Length: 136
Image 1 (cartoon, rainbow, N blue to C red):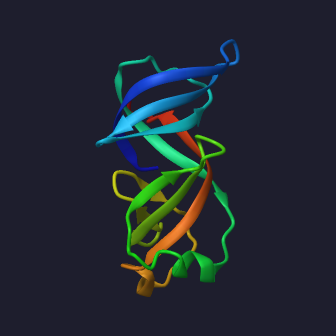
Image 2: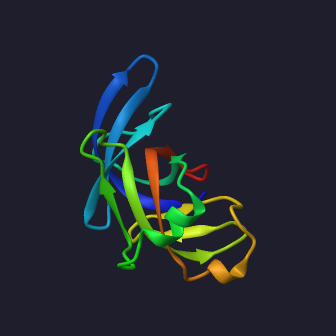
């Protein structure tokens, strides 16, 4: 998992005893919301975190044809603050790494074809997840 340095801005507890929360964090100049369990963060702290997501299945064709403007960004859903439309560029394979601007995601072993390096893609993160990195 790729590590990102973030500032924890706000924690909205879903279940404080169960340590489930939605966490607002800042990376670069933007703020994002993510699900966290167990949530061991504190508002205001800077942390190294891992960011992962639940993948909403797009077809291969949709993934590689819906970023025609060659953008690197994440747009939040108007219905769920932890859901994002992600636009990025594949920068590595084995594992596949997608650069979405301020956030990079490890996308697993979706392909071993190095021809996709440099390809612009689109995908939906149906839920962004945040966790402390193991070395923090």
